[in-house]
Figure (cartoon, one colour):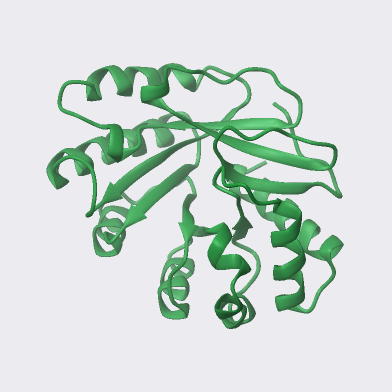
Length: 225
Protein backbone atom coordinates (compact mmCIF):
# COMPACT_ATOMS: atom_id res chain seq x y z
CA UNK A 1 0.00 0.00 0.00
CA UNK A 2 1.25 3.47 -0.87
CA UNK A 3 1.47 5.75 2.16
CA UNK A 4 1.80 9.51 2.52
CA UNK A 5 5.04 10.75 4.00
CA UNK A 6 5.65 13.38 6.69
CA UNK A 7 5.50 16.77 5.01
CA UNK A 8 3.06 15.66 2.28
CA UNK A 9 -0.10 17.55 1.47
CA UNK A 10 -2.94 14.99 1.46
CA UNK A 11 -5.83 15.52 -0.96
CA UNK A 12 -8.37 13.27 0.72
CA UNK A 13 -10.86 13.02 -2.15
CA UNK A 14 -10.34 13.72 -5.81
CA UNK A 15 -11.42 12.53 -9.26
CA UNK A 16 -8.94 12.35 -12.11
CA UNK A 17 -6.21 13.82 -9.96
CA UNK A 18 -2.49 13.36 -10.33
CA UNK A 19 0.04 13.16 -7.57
CA UNK A 20 2.91 15.64 -7.55
CA UNK A 21 6.06 15.94 -5.48
CA UNK A 22 4.89 16.49 -1.93
CA UNK A 23 1.20 15.93 -2.76
CA UNK A 24 -0.45 12.58 -1.95
CA UNK A 25 -3.89 11.96 -3.42
CA UNK A 26 -6.79 9.65 -2.68
CA UNK A 27 -8.46 8.98 -6.02
CA UNK A 28 -12.15 8.09 -5.90
CA UNK A 29 -13.11 5.46 -8.47
CA UNK A 30 -16.81 4.86 -9.10
CA UNK A 31 -18.17 1.47 -10.09
CA UNK A 32 -19.86 2.70 -13.28
CA UNK A 33 -16.47 3.90 -14.61
CA UNK A 34 -15.25 0.30 -14.94
CA UNK A 35 -11.78 1.19 -13.67
CA UNK A 36 -9.86 -0.44 -10.87
CA UNK A 37 -6.97 0.76 -8.69
CA UNK A 38 -3.48 0.64 -10.15
CA UNK A 39 0.04 0.97 -8.75
CA UNK A 40 0.78 4.65 -9.39
CA UNK A 41 3.14 6.28 -6.90
CA UNK A 42 1.68 8.84 -4.50
CA UNK A 43 -1.88 7.58 -4.94
CA UNK A 44 -4.31 5.40 -3.06
CA UNK A 45 -7.90 4.70 -4.05
CA UNK A 46 -11.43 4.43 -2.82
CA UNK A 47 -14.05 2.50 -4.79
CA UNK A 48 -17.79 2.66 -4.53
CA UNK A 49 -21.23 3.13 -6.03
CA UNK A 50 -22.27 6.75 -6.40
CA UNK A 51 -26.06 7.18 -6.19
CA UNK A 52 -26.21 9.37 -9.30
CA UNK A 53 -25.19 6.42 -11.44
CA UNK A 54 -27.16 3.71 -9.65
CA UNK A 55 -30.10 1.86 -11.20
CA UNK A 56 -32.09 -1.29 -10.49
CA UNK A 57 -30.43 -2.84 -13.54
CA UNK A 58 -26.81 -2.17 -12.64
CA UNK A 59 -26.62 -2.38 -8.87
CA UNK A 60 -25.83 -6.13 -8.65
CA UNK A 61 -22.93 -5.78 -11.10
CA UNK A 62 -21.64 -2.75 -9.29
CA UNK A 63 -21.76 -4.48 -5.90
CA UNK A 64 -19.72 -7.35 -7.35
CA UNK A 65 -17.16 -4.85 -8.59
CA UNK A 66 -16.98 -3.19 -5.18
CA UNK A 67 -16.26 -6.61 -3.71
CA UNK A 68 -13.61 -7.19 -6.39
CA UNK A 69 -11.96 -3.84 -5.67
CA UNK A 70 -11.11 -4.87 -2.12
CA UNK A 71 -8.43 -7.21 -3.47
CA UNK A 72 -6.28 -4.39 -4.82
CA UNK A 73 -3.46 -3.38 -2.44
CA UNK A 74 -3.83 0.38 -2.99
CA UNK A 75 -7.60 0.40 -2.39
CA UNK A 76 -8.02 1.87 1.10
CA UNK A 77 -11.75 2.54 1.52
CA UNK A 78 -15.23 1.83 0.19
CA UNK A 79 -17.00 4.76 -1.40
CA UNK A 80 -18.15 7.16 -2.20
CA UNK A 81 -21.31 5.45 -1.09
CA UNK A 82 -24.22 7.80 -1.17
CA UNK A 83 -27.56 9.02 0.03
CA UNK A 84 -28.89 11.88 -2.10
CA UNK A 85 -32.38 13.39 -1.84
CA UNK A 86 -31.90 15.58 -4.93
CA UNK A 87 -30.54 13.17 -7.51
CA UNK A 88 -30.47 9.43 -8.05
CA UNK A 89 -32.89 6.49 -7.83
CA UNK A 90 -35.50 5.83 -5.16
CA UNK A 91 -34.55 6.24 -1.50
CA UNK A 92 -35.29 2.55 -1.04
CA UNK A 93 -32.68 1.51 -3.61
CA UNK A 94 -30.17 4.07 -2.35
CA UNK A 95 -30.52 2.80 1.22
CA UNK A 96 -30.28 -0.83 0.13
CA UNK A 97 -27.07 -0.28 -1.83
CA UNK A 98 -25.63 1.95 0.88
CA UNK A 99 -26.14 -0.84 3.41
CA UNK A 100 -24.59 -3.36 1.03
CA UNK A 101 -21.49 -1.19 0.80
CA UNK A 102 -21.38 -0.87 4.58
CA UNK A 103 -21.42 -4.67 4.75
CA UNK A 104 -18.42 -4.82 2.40
CA UNK A 105 -16.67 -2.12 4.40
CA UNK A 106 -17.08 -4.12 7.59
CA UNK A 107 -16.26 -7.50 6.06
CA UNK A 108 -12.99 -6.27 4.57
CA UNK A 109 -12.02 -3.81 7.33
CA UNK A 110 -12.13 -0.84 4.97
CA UNK A 111 -13.43 2.56 6.12
CA UNK A 112 -16.37 4.15 4.32
CA UNK A 113 -16.42 7.40 2.31
CA UNK A 114 -19.86 9.00 2.06
CA UNK A 115 -21.66 11.31 -0.37
CA UNK A 116 -24.63 12.85 1.44
CA UNK A 117 -27.04 15.48 0.12
CA UNK A 118 -30.10 16.52 2.15
CA UNK A 119 -30.12 13.09 3.83
CA UNK A 120 -28.43 13.81 7.14
CA UNK A 121 -31.15 12.20 9.26
CA UNK A 122 -31.09 9.09 7.07
CA UNK A 123 -27.32 8.87 7.43
CA UNK A 124 -27.47 9.14 11.20
CA UNK A 125 -30.25 6.55 11.28
CA UNK A 126 -28.16 4.17 9.16
CA UNK A 127 -25.18 4.64 11.48
CA UNK A 128 -27.31 3.93 14.52
CA UNK A 129 -28.90 0.88 12.90
CA UNK A 130 -25.76 -0.68 11.44
CA UNK A 131 -23.37 0.13 14.30
CA UNK A 132 -20.24 0.05 12.11
CA UNK A 133 -16.87 -0.77 13.59
CA UNK A 134 -15.01 0.86 10.71
CA UNK A 135 -14.77 4.67 10.48
CA UNK A 136 -17.12 6.67 8.25
CA UNK A 137 -16.06 9.90 6.53
CA UNK A 138 -18.40 12.44 4.92
CA UNK A 139 -16.70 14.00 1.93
CA UNK A 140 -17.55 17.46 0.61
CA UNK A 141 -18.85 18.63 3.97
CA UNK A 142 -20.11 22.22 4.03
CA UNK A 143 -22.60 22.19 6.88
CA UNK A 144 -23.04 24.20 10.04
CA UNK A 145 -21.07 24.08 13.28
CA UNK A 146 -23.98 22.22 14.87
CA UNK A 147 -24.07 19.59 12.10
CA UNK A 148 -20.32 19.13 12.23
CA UNK A 149 -20.34 18.68 15.99
CA UNK A 150 -23.21 16.21 15.74
CA UNK A 151 -21.35 13.98 13.30
CA UNK A 152 -18.01 14.31 15.08
CA UNK A 153 -19.69 13.26 18.32
CA UNK A 154 -20.74 10.03 16.58
CA UNK A 155 -17.16 9.34 15.46
CA UNK A 156 -17.49 10.49 11.85
CA UNK A 157 -14.59 12.09 10.00
CA UNK A 158 -15.28 15.18 7.87
CA UNK A 159 -13.54 16.10 4.62
CA UNK A 160 -14.41 19.69 3.78
CA UNK A 161 -15.58 20.76 0.34
CA UNK A 162 -12.82 22.77 -1.33
CA UNK A 163 -14.87 25.87 -2.12
CA UNK A 164 -16.37 26.01 1.35
CA UNK A 165 -12.95 25.57 3.00
CA UNK A 166 -11.61 28.55 1.04
CA UNK A 167 -14.47 30.87 2.04
CA UNK A 168 -14.22 33.27 4.96
CA UNK A 169 -17.46 31.89 6.35
CA UNK A 170 -15.77 28.55 7.12
CA UNK A 171 -13.19 30.15 9.42
CA UNK A 172 -15.35 30.05 12.54
CA UNK A 173 -16.33 26.44 11.84
CA UNK A 174 -12.72 25.31 11.65
CA UNK A 175 -11.87 27.21 14.83
CA UNK A 176 -14.76 25.61 16.71
CA UNK A 177 -13.93 21.98 15.96
CA UNK A 178 -11.43 19.52 17.32
CA UNK A 179 -8.82 18.78 14.67
CA UNK A 180 -8.51 15.02 15.07
CA UNK A 181 -11.13 14.05 12.49
CA UNK A 182 -10.76 16.61 9.69
CA UNK A 183 -9.52 16.31 6.12
CA UNK A 184 -9.22 18.60 3.11
CA UNK A 185 -9.98 17.78 -0.52
CA UNK A 186 -10.19 19.16 -4.06
CA UNK A 187 -12.94 16.78 -5.30
CA UNK A 188 -11.32 16.92 -8.75
CA UNK A 189 -11.81 20.67 -9.13
CA UNK A 190 -9.23 22.99 -10.68
CA UNK A 191 -7.89 24.10 -7.32
CA UNK A 192 -4.55 23.52 -5.57
CA UNK A 193 -4.72 21.56 -2.33
CA UNK A 194 -1.78 23.63 -1.09
CA UNK A 195 -3.91 26.77 -1.24
CA UNK A 196 -6.59 25.08 0.85
CA UNK A 197 -4.03 24.06 3.46
CA UNK A 198 -2.69 27.61 3.58
CA UNK A 199 -6.10 29.13 4.28
CA UNK A 200 -7.17 26.52 6.84
CA UNK A 201 -3.83 26.74 8.66
CA UNK A 202 -4.43 30.49 8.98
CA UNK A 203 -7.94 29.81 10.30
CA UNK A 204 -6.51 27.48 12.93
CA UNK A 205 -3.59 29.79 13.77
CA UNK A 206 -1.05 27.05 13.10
CA UNK A 207 1.61 26.60 10.42
CA UNK A 208 1.05 24.65 7.23
CA UNK A 209 3.55 22.07 8.47
CA UNK A 210 1.60 21.65 11.69
CA UNK A 211 -1.61 21.18 9.68
CA UNK A 212 0.13 18.60 7.51
CA UNK A 213 1.03 16.71 10.68
CA UNK A 214 -2.54 16.85 11.95
CA UNK A 215 -4.01 15.49 8.72
CA UNK A 216 -1.30 12.83 8.37
CA UNK A 217 -2.19 11.51 11.83
CA UNK A 218 -5.88 11.63 10.95
CA UNK A 219 -5.17 9.65 7.77
CA UNK A 220 -3.46 6.84 9.64
CA UNK A 221 -6.20 6.84 12.28
CA UNK A 222 -8.89 6.67 9.60
CA UNK A 223 -7.20 3.66 8.03
CA UNK A 224 -6.56 2.10 11.45
CA UNK A 225 -2.85 1.83 10.64
